Length: 488
Image (tube, rainbow, N blue to C red):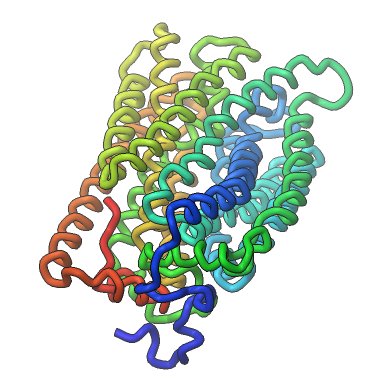
């Protein structure tokens, strides 16, 4: 199948094609490849690490400010606080397809950096909000801008790293969710000791927003757009960088929107399995983000305790993510299995929150910490896009649909925390069990689908590696590229 009957050769070819030496070109020596990978890691990973940690801190700043008078300071009542968690993801949802389109069309490094500066400014304006309408608008705009980060980073992973390298690198930046939880807990604890000046809840937004603005400027200077245009690599190193990634059989990037890939994306079962996985994963997410301080406080801990008792949960998340990344790197074919194990641990934690008596505060706290394994399962689902979807238009749309599911789950989640059920929140904990169970079933279905597809292609289309690599550099999708094999 041709990439597009109306496209000329320049539209079909990858933007990095001029550095592509062909599938038959000898690979770089191990020493050369290692040197180039080291330079890429030093340039790319620190920026992804910092940006991802800040976006997690910024969107969850509501959680850290909630115990310092946020509701009183912004005149919130009833379910208003729950709606703030939901409204953020309405902004995130509205942004998905326009931001996905712009990520394909524009230089990705500069686009992400400018958006980081913008959301930092938006966060710093939060203290000016004095009512629900004001802070709801602020949260919507914050969600609209932060929505760029996850799809962009999925794309960056596929542009710079081989399929084998992606899990550990993705976990290296995604583990900042755990670091952010720990750092946010420490920052919240420090803010709790401020006794003068502005109301304490306002300092959370001012501090986190200012850091994001500064970091966005650093990213603008430091984060490159493409391996083929990266100034920190010389000409030969750019060639090596492009040819390394070409062996993923996915190409690097093509900025032309292709209608046939959009249609194929909508027809592909993987797209909708990933959508269901994201919804199931994110329904419980608000318990670990917007409501974590309130939940810990409901167990019987004091205001400062609600901050530092979140730190172990962040440590669990950090260790789970790094450990999962190492396992999936050393043992290919373990991604879905790792996701299943992580999700089973989450089901156990959520079930304990449902079943343990309110008097068992330490048992319930440990149960909440177990739910922080959630990040490992969701982050690995992102590698299902970066490693298993080819064709730039299709990859970007698949990521956008996955994050629509992410938004749907996060829109539903806060509404399960009913003010009338405080402090037990029984409905929310039941919803967590249901969400994790739905996600587990979706992972199993995805694994079976990809495993059977690989076996069928091995029998019907053996030995097509060279053709598959060249097809990837002509922006052919994984379904049309018969030499493509899914990473399990």
